[in-house]
Length: 464
Ligand code: 5GP
Ligand code: SF4
Ligand code: MG
Image 1 (cartoon, protein in one colour):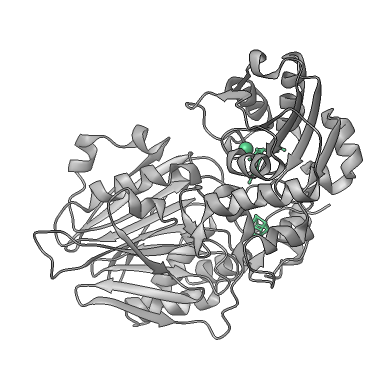
Image 2: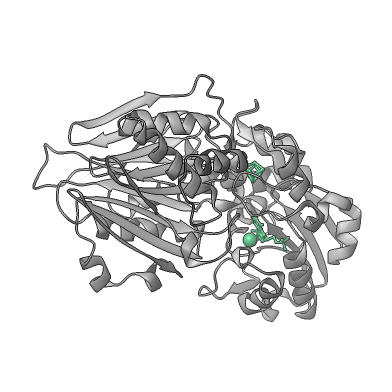
């Protein structure tokens, strides 16, 4: 999911949120929503669909206010329905709360019971709603906004990057492992230079689009509270232990975002260089699976000296195939998406680079398309290690039995997808390329080493 928040001095917060969400569209295409605060009054609009489908000029005009919180959703838990669209809106003793969440909790079941035990009723099945009610519950005991949010976060386990809007201001929170990203920016406007306006976004591309300057990441286990007094920071976790999702770096986030201290484009280029060093091959051209494989393919080409070419043309109007809810839709989606260029491919020994193989269905179809277009040899290089384990922290990598590398060796995968050769990036290279050889990342989907313990019942739901 994508989350966004802004505290402005004027009443244009909804428009800023709209553009911020537009830049974060790749993080979720199922639903979009914005809540604004105008004094104590809250305005909300959310619906299924893309940001540009959910909002227009007229709707944004009906969202006045100087504070806005926004969300783009892709479902990992909870069904694909409008009740699950965010921000989650909850009435509290102190006023309305609007919460946008990215990540997945692992102790939702326990928290749900606690919330229900206090006679709150839940509308949905999402962990995000449970967090919002847990905060409301703390508020009902007499605590203020800040203490309530901190107390609720201290009961949550799992991945949560939150943006929380209140009539008084906006909060940004990251879980103690900082699994999902969240950045802080500042917007200075010419007509009120003395009033800094703060912005929160999942990625820096959400700041760039509105001309906000990137200040820093919200830190793992930190809460920032932005009010008329300015920005205040609270480190609410006893044991912050940074474990940024390495899949964000490899695939999920936009290449023009800054993460872990550098541009993701540069990181992905370097993954391609490592791959070319580790698993060289004689070939005539290097092509990418667009768009996610492009930086690594360029890196592979630059290091190997094999020319980079465009061999597959992508229809830019089709969303990310993996985000669509069913396998049947996924299969349809792939055909709509990529078309091979016969004049580039015919008679050539082709290296095709992709960022990941998850289920193996994309690769299988692409390899067939390349051969149909006349490729003489097809060598696949993947700029991440084999995905052997499901994610419980907010990326939809599916159940373990759907992951091709969970049950098959590299050679068996090569046979299955029909390539002449296949190689994955080494696990240590993936970390080394980030100039971080020690373990500041979660890389559980490549190793099974889950940094946050998964309760047995949840494990059973996704692991073989
Ligand atoms: P698959 O092997 O599942 O058919 O597809 C792998 C390709 O789709 C890669 O190009 C990758 O960018 C993208 N992809 C597909 N499914 C997922 C998924 O569940 N999670 C992520 N992160 N990427 C996926
Ligand atoms: Fe990211 Fe994989 Fe860890 Fe999930 S399991 S948080 S996708 S690295
Ligand atoms: Mg891809």
